[in-house]
Image (cartoon, rainbow, N blue to C red; front, side):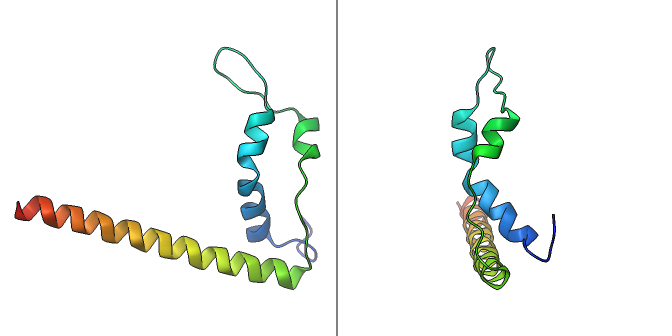
Length: 85
């Protein structure tokens, strides 16, 4: 990956956002899905300017951090309720 043009974090989020589409396009049998190189190459990923990629990735990083903290708070509340009752 040429980091002069593509932010790794942005690319990770972009690929993850297309994961359901990629899996739906996969084929296979016996419970296993296979993704062909052609199908993977056919998935389009928007490529804004590098500063915009960094801005988007930073926003998504913050959202992920908030989501993790919320999950931790829920777990702490559940643990507390189990301990009290």
